[in-house]
Every structure is written in structure tokens, then in C-alpha cells.
Image (cartoon, rainbow over all chains, first blue to last red; front, top):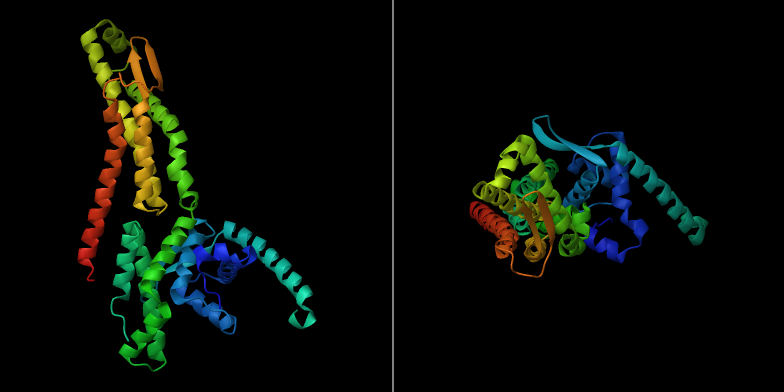
Length: 119
Length: 236
């Protein structure tokens, strides 16, 4: 479970774990604009429920990414419901590339250490 | 069990933590939308109304914790929020004299450019006429106070924007206040001086020192009153 605690994560986890929620959110937003609930649902379904955010926990990440100009948001009305849609920016794309290559490096390193059955 | 005031509790906690009200409205609206989506999903799964709401509140977790997370995210998103000790405890020591001088000069240039009694002809008259020069001195003193107030206001604004506690805003203003006691600017016919002094012979230095504290006090009171008013509107 990705239980994000921005404040404690930095202190207690190795740095490569810090970027996982960020990586997931940015990756999902490459496909299309989404709002918070959709992002949480997508993460849950596309990871076969092995990863899930606490429902409210997505917003600190989204707002952090927005403050970093990695995503932008716009309030729009769709099917009678007004929602805040998040979209990936050029800076977000660059950040996604950096995080993805870091993630590949870490996972391949872990796989080497753990043996082939974990690869 | 249903938690009927999830949104209200979130709202209250965000305000208590000093979240700017525009941000509170946005956060609360988003979480309320999310809550509604969860509730609709639960209803679609066949849960009754109260059952759906109860599950929704469990899924969303503790609103107080969520508010603290949201505020932490906001603090983390800016340099000012991440390094608040440096930004509001140490930086004003270096920044105050520089910013004060820049703002003072900027105001003088603006006043001169706009011709509010500072054009060369009027200055020549003022220099040769002690009575008129008194007005120039008063104007100078006024823009000096404005410069001090603007520097304090800038730090207050940064503190509010970075979502750090009001105590850090007051700390920055206290540093500005201390420095305002020892910085000075002065004009004489054909001369302009600025500097530091530990000598209290300069008139009204205490007033300069009081200005940043007054700015911080005004913003502190405004924030407290806004919080109280907001809390009165939102049932406990």
C-alpha cells in the first residue's frame, strides 16, 4: 500500500521511495486529464489493488505537483458535476522521465540482488 | 457510524492551521467532490444511504490528519515553507536593510518621476527655504516608514503564502523591528544618507521599530478574527 505521509516519508524512507506516488500520478496523467477520485480509482484498478492511496491522501500530492508546476488544474463541469481536472505540463513530463529512469535503475538493482524469481 | 461533519472538521482544522481561505475553499470543494463520488459508488454497490456515508467517511480517514497532510504539502511545495527557520528567522537579518533601502530609493525615484514636489525646481526652492524643506523632510520620513512597513508586509505575505505558522510571521517582523531601530535614512540639502547606528539620538527610531510589529499585529488579529468568524459559521 502506498500510504503517503509527505512529512514522515522524507525522514523514514530511502529517497527512491519518496517519488513513487509522484511517479504514479504523473504516469497516469500522461494519458488524459483526470480528477482526484479518478486517479485513486485508476491506481487501484490498474495495479490490481496492490497499491492504493488513502482516499484523501491524493490531494496533498496533487497540490504539491501543481505548486511545482508539474501539473496544472482547471475546474470544469462534466455530466452535471463540477470537478478539478489535472493535466500534465511540460515540466511534469520531464520530471516523469527522470523518475521513470530512476525507478528502472532501482528496480533492476533490486532484482539483481534478490535473484531471478523477483525480477 | 456516520461522521456527519467530516467536511466541517476538515474546514475548521485547515483554518486553525492558518491555511489561506481561498485555498481552504478549494481544498474543501475537492474533498467534498471526492466524498460524493465515493458515496455514489457505495450506493451503486447497493449500500443504503447511511451505510454509504459511513463507508465513505472510513475511506476518507481522519479529517484532522488529512488537513495536516494538506498543509504539510503546501509548506513543502515552496522554499519558504521548507526552510522556514532560515526564511523567517535568519533571512530578514540580511534582507531587511537591502529591501528597505531599495524600497526607499524606489519611492524617492517614483516621487521624483511623478513630480510630487520633488522636481528639481521645487527642490532648489525647498533647499533655500527652511520651512519648505521641513515638508520635504516630513515626506521623506513618511516614505521611510512606508518602506519599513512594506518589508514587514512582504515577509508576512510570504509566511501566509508558505502556510507556515503565524509565529514565524511574527518572528520575521520582530527581526525587522529590531533592525529598524538601528537603520536610518536622512536627507539634508543636496545630500542623502543611510546607515546603521546604535545611537538613539535619531528622532523617532522607536516608531520605525514599532511599524513591523504593528504590521504583524494587524495581520495576526485579522487572521484570528477571520478564523473565529469562519468557525462561528461552521458548526462544531
